[in-house]
Length: 287
Image (cartoon, rainbow, N blue to C red; front, side, top):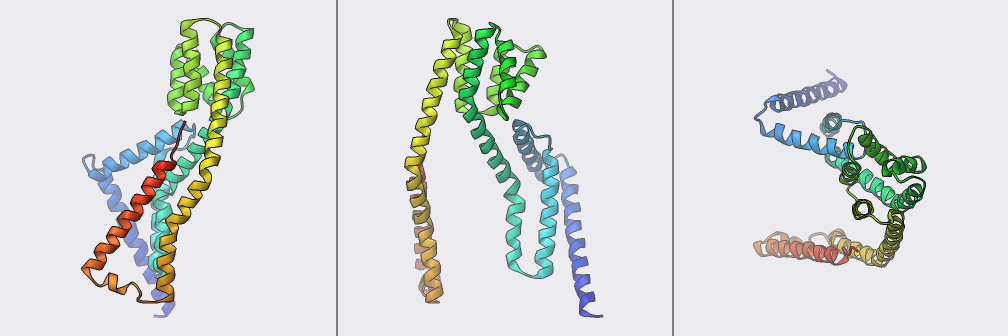
């Protein structure tokens, strides 16, 4: 047999091993009392919840199938090429979907919060034309942009299905989960309940939210430099250790070869992580 035949045999054995591992995993998942099934159900439910809140039609189980296929391909590459660096590809396959969905959620939330001011002013102008809050929300929907328009469209659909205005507004706030939008919707609910000039209340709320947005921008600009300094100081010990180890091999051998050295390394790591946590707490300033 030639070297190429051995290579094909190696790849075939690896593929069969990974296929058997996947089959065993699916067989375990099918058992309703198995621990993997409970974790699988929680993970799929978390993905479905994130996708639903962002109004995406994809299902969480399809993401899991894609992750399993990516893990199999990455594992085959690791075994086939015999390089340990290929194992780094397992990290994106495991945590990539959640991180990407969280990034999409934050970006969508920022876009919605940027539209709250315009939403309040448009709703106030619509209330000048009609006293019905439902009709005013319908007029407002046509003038908004995505993603706020899609969220408001769902609230209007709930109104057409028989829900009250308060229920539709509360459902909108629970779905988006934005403190800025919650403040605006709370102003609408309180204004409807206490009576008075709702248009004036909405305009005042829009001005307040606009000022809060400006102050948040100032706060972010003031803390951006400190956050970049924290990032540099966090990487500096790692770069220093790497540089000393490369320039003077064996420099850290006394620490690695004794129990006292291991204790000192552990204490240094704990202090390093603790300092990062304290710095993060100090810079996590919110209005």
